[in-house]
Length: 154
Image (cartoon, rainbow, N blue to C red; front, side, top):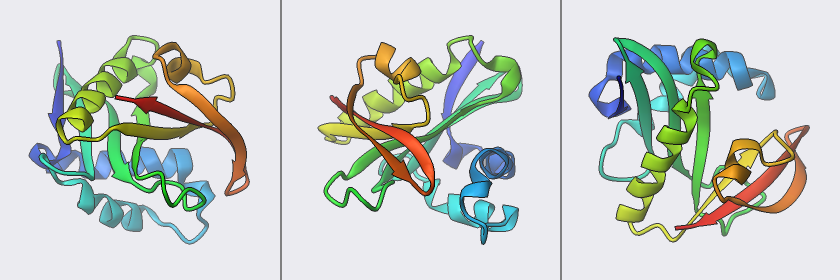
């Protein structure tokens, strides 16, 4: 059975999350190291305010992760609250893990009085987010990568 837990309550898993992020997106910042990734994630050790991170844990294994954060894309200074860092370990993909984490983060954001959430995805068709009711705003090239920026009113 999968449980959703705050990173703040499972700090020992932070290096694993940092490794996932570094391996998946580290190429976007040549100056970034795995050690810097671990340091950068320290700000997500919250449970009652943004930024925060939610983990999916099942049978003692870390299955996936996602974040609520501020200002993910510098080209959108007025878009405040973002869903980001959605990552599911390869062996758990296609099993609804990301969907469950996203739904819980939306509920948390709503409880924190967030009205609109934004995200960026390399899936230019919107993928899972489109199926979950997120609306495309625009497609842009950001840090050399074509991404679709989406929003959800909550």
